[in-house]
Length: 307
Image (cartoon, rainbow, N blue to C red; front, side, top):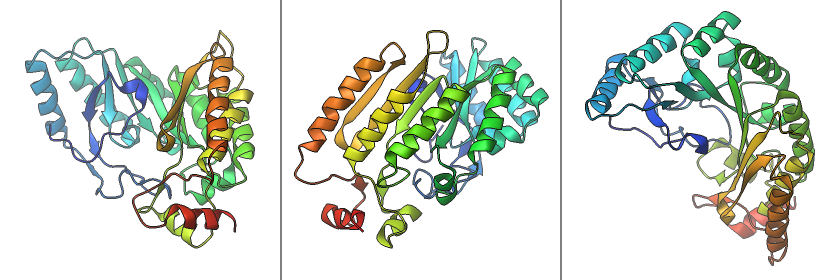
C-alpha cells in the first residue's frame, strides 16, 4: 500500500503490522496537533485494505499483532470494525490482537455490548489522547472530551476487558501550570489505571492554531526545564503496585532526552534520571523552548513567556 501522510503510533506498536484503514484524523481539531492538518480525512476503501492484506499474505506475512491506523480508527462504527477485523483474520490466521487509537467520544458512542463484541474479536489496546488533567486546558486545546467523560469511557473499556493506554503532553498547560497539571494527571491515572502512559512532550509548531495563541499571548509556553519538572512531579505522584504496574515512556525529543520504565519497579531510577536532566537544563544560560518549523526565535519566545 502507498502510505499517505506520516506514520503516527505509540512506541509499543513498533513491532506491530501497521494497516492503514483511514487517512488522517476524523476529528483533527486539537489546537496543538499538526500531524494531520495537511491531509484531507478520508476512509480507505474496504477493497483497498483487503488488497494490502492479500499482498502481505502472499509474501508469507502472518502478523500476530496489528495496528489499525491512522488517527482514530475506533471512530468506525462497530459493524464496520468487525467486518474489517474478520476480513484481516481471513488472511492472517495467526492474528491475535488488534490495537488502534481512539477518542473518548468514539468509546462513549459504543454500547457495552458492542465493546464486548470487539473484545471477543481480538481488539485489545486503545490509545487515548488524554493530554491534560485539567478541564480548562482540555477546553482551550479543543479536545473532544472533559475528564468526567474520559472517566466514563475508561470505565466502559475496563468493563469490557479492553486495555486503556494514555497519551499525554507535558507543557500543554503552559508556563507556571506544570505542577498543577502533573498532580491532576497523577490523580486521574491513580483512579483509571492505564497500562501504558506515553508522554509526547509538547512541541511548539508554527503550523498549528496554538502558534497564533503564543504570538497573541493567549498561551504562554513552558520551557523544556519546566516540562522535565512536570514529568518528575507526575511520576513522583503516580501510584502503581506489582498487581497493577504501569509502563511509562516520556519523550522530550527537542532536548534528546527520554525517560522510561515500569512503575513501581523503576520509579526511583526514573526519578534520578530526570533529576540529572533537570540539573543539566538548569545549567543553561537561558530557557530553551521546543519551537520547530521556523518563525518566532528562541529569544522572542523567552520574551513571550515573561508576559
